[in-house]
Length: 265
Image (cartoon, rainbow, N blue to C red; front, side):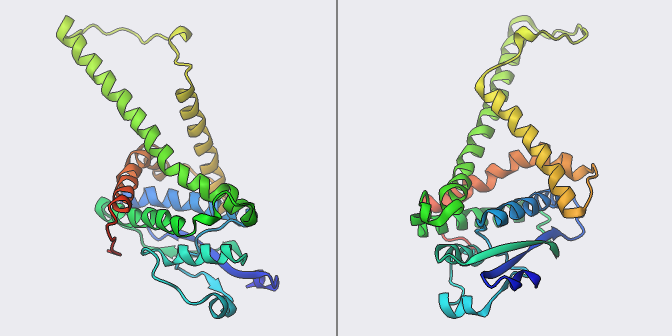
């Protein structure tokens, strides 16, 4: 509530955390939600929040009397409301110390359906508010955040596609070698030579992205929990999440291209 002492503040969003994760998927989401807490704190400082989460976001009543009520918005009404507020230069801030807990999907099918809806909502709400993109009138959210968020959808697919392609090529190479010389059962100590280190641009970008991810995860847990502690959710997130995300990114793009309607559940 103290955020509303600033008369310019029209809405305050909370920090959403995962309630009692029980399986691998929910532990992955716990780490992801901690990341989101850091991200929302950063976007708040830039005046660039583009979602007012359904759980426990607080508004001044004049928001609805002046801009109208929630609208049907590609099954992501909380995102459309935030974009509508940003378009009209209404200030949204985040209270990272106000925690609300959510029960997350416990199955891969449920998770993909939920995240595909979120991504589909972002893409389609972005098209509805396309005039905000690269528009100085809307500050950081128009010039940087919305374009970067859109670009990240395609860059994530590109990077994962490259990794999978490299694995497939390596597998084909191993099969061809086996067909040529048979199974080599001799074991030898691993060796390392700097000459064979791949110094291309893509490996450098991947390593940089991994390093930044680990650093941001550290900051995220410090902000969300007041401390950083290694736990299995972090490892699940680092090694599995990257390869899960394309499942809902591709589905959201498919639904958008072919104008398929999405459902809540």
